Image (cartoon, rainbow, N blue to C red; front, side):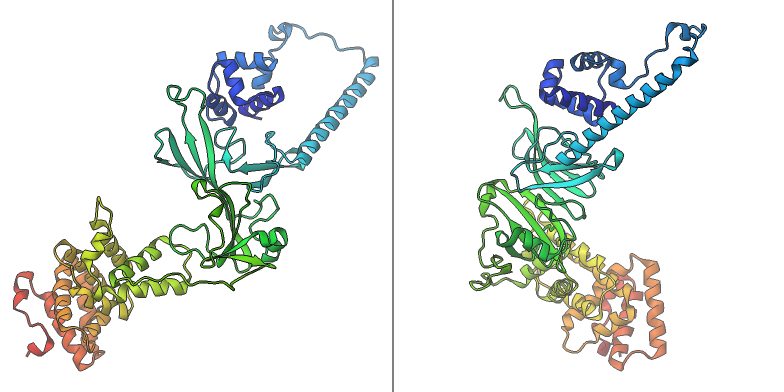
Length: 518
């Protein structure tokens, strides 16, 4: 047992809170919390004060062995052993004492296990919004740990055995005294608010922490009604029934886990608290408890658009309404599809394909100036260069995507520094598949001006990567020699090769189409 665990145990046996013990010692509640969690150790003065408060010696508190008797320490003669005739009853007494001690210990452990507590954290009586799990202890006993939403008595890890697996993410809030903490503890992820102590503003408000979100995707962590990851839809409905609402699959933004749909649970008595059970293939895939603060108990009220009531365990779609649809521009469609691909980890393979197709197929029709207006006020160009970087990273491209990239050369608003960024996308398309790139230039019905621009812009950037350019030329030469092109495709392949091998300053005199090659 660590020093922190002994301090915690003695404090709780004394029946005082961390704040009260700190007041007795003249230190803050946070200092006591750090001692108990092992984040810091008390100095000798505080050790003496702790031992005095607990009514034990410093040696007992720190588990330090008592010093040997003077004769032993000085190396003097050991006292003679007791007469042999008295040894039998001493041995019996020791055995009896050991049996009594072990029996008492097992009774205490059994009582604690039955009470469902660890570190003396009581189960949140009457609450429907906490996460619980079992922790193995000595004697193969299992103690329960609980983690509730709302204000906490202790600081992170709130008296539990949770340990960070990644550094905490700390974000500022509108309140200068508060910070939002995101804690990844492996099986459990938390968000909590830490509010500092400001005696000049409110001497009665101590430093405190408030849990706003608890989430898990790991079996063994359950709701107060015993539902955990891996439980079936039947288990969920048997436990919660029509108290749940049925929610369509979340679209866009952050989602906890891939899912087909999810159930949400709220009660009128617990303002702002919610429980979500994410379902995939008929099983619970993730659990999220959240204190929604300003949202109140209406956050998961049925709206018959995305949230529906349950009737006998099945969603009632009888009053279903279609969401309002707005007419959006091609540029907006590109922006929405791109953002879903970047931010939504919950997309199916079919949805990812559809979004990717929207981005590439609409490149010729979009307005890069309009896209710029969708960026942040501080850095409006971020939207443009973000999309271009994403497009560049998607190589290798399909044959259709290569054609759409080529035809996007003449899109509205693609000029200046934006053109240079687009050149890199074109050269990536060339380097990934020179043969398909050449064939795409010969596509019937494609815009001739876009083809000419594609030749100039591709060659402009390809010069910057001589090794890649040499490989592309070797591939083109082999294809030309191997007869893999039709006559029309061969003309564009030869024209492309001409652009790639002509110095930049001389390209202005080159023909714009194979017909001008002569």
